[in-house]
Amino acid sequence: MIQAFVNTEKGIRNINSLEVSRLPKDAVWLDLLDPDPEEEAAVESFLRIDVPSEEEIVEIEDSSRFYQRKDNVYVTATVLSRLETGRISDTDVRFALTPKTLVSIRYEDSRPFRLFSGRLLRDSSESESSDSIMEKMLEMIVDDMADILERIALDVDELSHKIFFSRRTGNMESDAASEISLHDVIKYLGRYGEQVSEIRLSILNMNRLLIFLSQCGEKWWRTETRSRLQTLIRDVRSLTEHAAFLANRVSFMLDGVLGMINIEQNNIIKIFSVAAVVFLPPTLIASIYGMNFRSMPELSWDFGYPVAILLMIISALLPYSFFKRKGWL
Image (tube, rainbow, N blue to C red; front, top):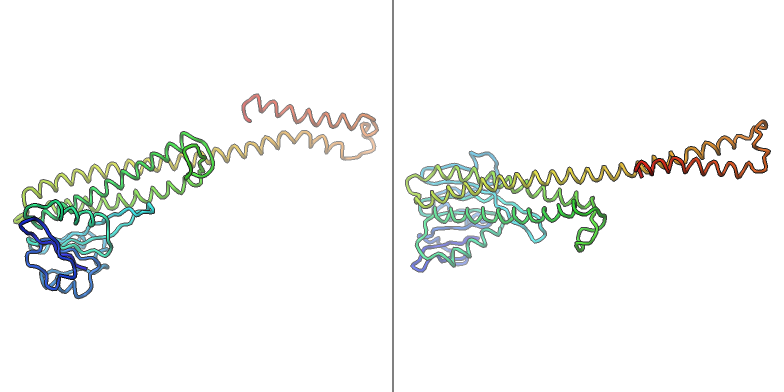
């Protein structure tokens, strides 16, 4: 599907794929979503650029993601989108920037593009250039990254309070007074750690993309675009620091939870150890008087049985009282 955005006297308007039999010459942005071969050929013929395949877009080396051919600039951005399930989805988007037209090639729909296209149609009131639309699109992507990072930070903060301000067991999904399962906590922390890793990878890619763009387009880029790119670079660096802090916090929380689990396991083992020590003396006494030797004078006592029982009880209470006084129980 192709959407064409063109400049008019009243601002930007779009032409959907049903109307694009011939691409408009005044198109300032062409958005290709999962294009078919005919649409790729139309864009290549119109702008005389190569439309990359999905396999080419996902390549990770810098020479394939960021490069310039004459006045045309080609960059690939990793765009994140938080789904309703809470999971983060990422997709690579290739931008081809020419002096007159911006082309975006993507194979998955994502939230930043939906928001940006609506904002562009609603708020644009003057003639837009391809480089200004590119900068505003990247600004929307960075803002969406920040929103996702903030949401994860709030979730991690809430989980941290549940871990360190309540020692409970149970289901985390109930109300605040409910109990918390350390097993579930580990799964939540693993999920947050994976999400933060995906965000850090996307931010790293965005930082390299912006640095590359800041060194391109000397002949035809607007001064305002260059200035806003520098602001974006500073914003991305601040997100990098925040994501690193969040990753360290998740790691600290995971270490804390594992420490709690070790303490609980040690407490269980301690109980078994104390129980073994408490029942060892009675077992010893019972073993002695269970040998049934004829020369044992106690076997003929009428009060031998209650004396043995009493000795076993006393021998069990003495180590139990000792452990209790030491605070080991």
